[in-house]
Image (cartoon, rainbow, N blue to C red; front, side, top):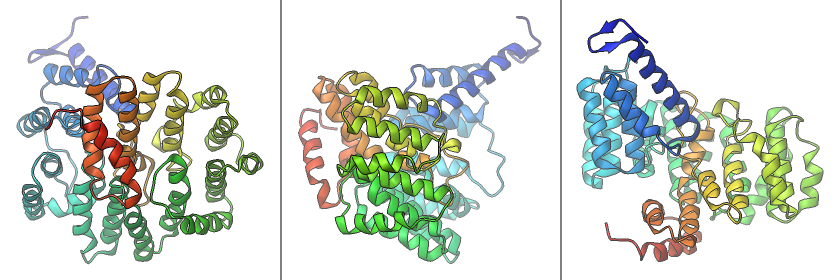
Length: 413
């Protein structure tokens, strides 16, 4: 199709590259980098039009998250050289990426030096407050923890709350559950917003049901009491769903069946609950069939609960593992998304909990890969998980030992 030439590009060329960019953006937001050709499509878009800023920011994010230092730095340098600054007042995108690269690839002391430098930039402090909770999206929970610490000590109460929530999510990713819950409860005290406390109670029931460690029984019993007293409306439905997930995990399947009727119909939570009950009675084929309808409708804006997507994909991975390990690995890789609603501010949202559970999912994927002789995948997944859990709660020691055994077969980095 002929087009009007604009420099070396026709209008048809420009339409194609924008269409490609929009497709890649949608794919990354839904399922991250797992789709074959996503990063190649971004590189191709940059080759056709080297002045598209979003191309370089997406590439820099993707390669940073993957741990590819050279390609991440190359994308960042292209952004600095060719990309137009994002038209957001009082925000420094360059600062965010510079800090993400430092936190991901530099020694701790050098990363701290970069953090100090960014704080002296004109828009650096405002950018930190807005982007702090993207640390997990870049794969740097320790960096998110450090920036959260900076924000938790500023005079502004909203920024303090933002810092505490950022730290809570980072600590969860690092297996420091007690400290994580404490930060979320501190956010409640600082803000007066009961949703933070509600989510802390949800975590105490849903996360151990998924296999995470470090949740004591006294705290879980207190959470059951809180969920039982939840108000009517959306929070009531979330509380009923949380209690149902907990009942299945604690072998009270009859209670779970009885609780199913309390959930709104139709709703994604009810469908997911029905799948969980099917699996609990031993019919994982039915569980997969029931939950299939949910897998294409898991955009963050449509989630009925922040933990819904994590429960869906962690559960489906377990159901798939014996029959289709490749599909199981894909399900357990759901965390490679960028599906946040706006900037992650306020209450923890679905994408952030996906990112926070990445460490645990890497542990699962590593074990699955090892069972199939996939040593290369083990060596790609396990090191980050082991590093993140370096100072995890004692309950994570068995999982750390498993990772150590897997890593013994990997080349030293």
